[in-house]
Length: 490
Image (cartoon, rainbow, N blue to C red; front, side, top):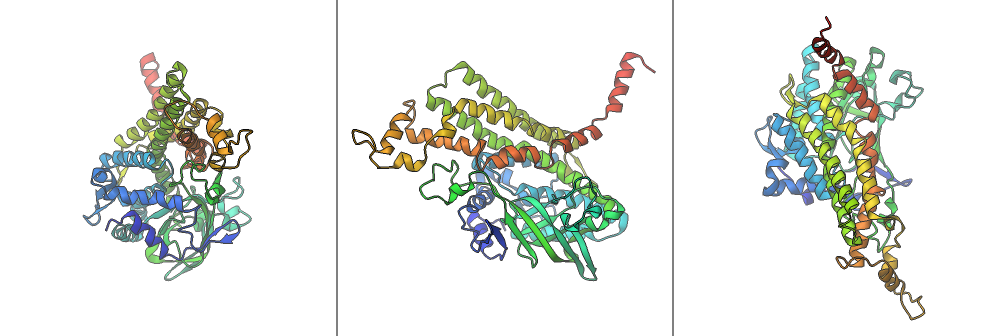
């Protein structure tokens, strides 16, 4: 079944997910003005899958059931699937100008599928079958699944078992005949509240003494003992203000992050995908990170398209679109954005089949992709702010522009004065100019900057994580041999 966006939203109402924000429990979180824009983003992944125009990108034939499924619930079967994933993510970035949150689950599916296969091959466990059965459930119900990897970690200089508080890493606290009990938390979880289920994965490579922390499993969002604390975003309380639709910049769509807490949660055997096989923790981490670093070559590029378009509009509305330096800045922004897309497509085109049969991206190129993502969006945003001008951050509020309070000596209202002094090119009304500048503010500094800036830096691993992987996979020794051969060194 392929749900519509509205059916997805209604399905969330059936969950008893525990959500806390600003020190209070949120009962109706589905309609909460701060949370709802992020739900609208996820709903777009459903609505586009219903549109015949986008069916080839948004849907795929399941290798498990033979049925048509949303591509976000699909196991990649070819390099063509990998490329379509990136194109789908760019499309959604263009449609929402925000984080649409469903990528982490898709990337987790593919990482867990191949890792469980190889774990079973070594240890004779049943994790792969467990995972396949779970994914069939997901595909049949068209569920959103949050992929959760990042633990709070505590003291970064200490291994999981050496932390003063073991809960700083998700870990097994009890092993039962019918399952396990887990405790701990996952931080920075994108779209976790908007998800039906969660896949939990270890956050780093493990040693034998950390085996209780080498755990992967699935659980529903409203499982007993699990709750979430919503993360703040820049300018988030604007969403609570009346008459601030323009001031939001992007009134319909937004992202979401939360702290997900496991307070002695029971996990039945059928939903366990790793439980102590510490030597496979690193494999799962590396594969998930690779897929997720590929993802950024799609989603951030789509949002970048909107940033570039908004900057070009701002230049036009300011009457500066013909200035040579503005044209050059737009060219540079486009060059950087398309370079990111090239990296996403390249690591997809160079993908290969895993032992389990699904396709893995080229890990070296995926890490190069994400390394560029840690830099280029910041430069794109800098150039956008340059083009937009200072009014982007000093403009009066929407209420001022609409105020009928008389303050001028000739009886002018505050609204009339604002509209008079902030008028620009005849190409736009004052309100249109205000709208595009607020959109840029949202993307460069406001709520969407979480997904486009800081997440570009730290999501799917901070810059040093990619540099470590590039060092491992860059084959410097092989390159030295090439140089020796040409130089005549034996």
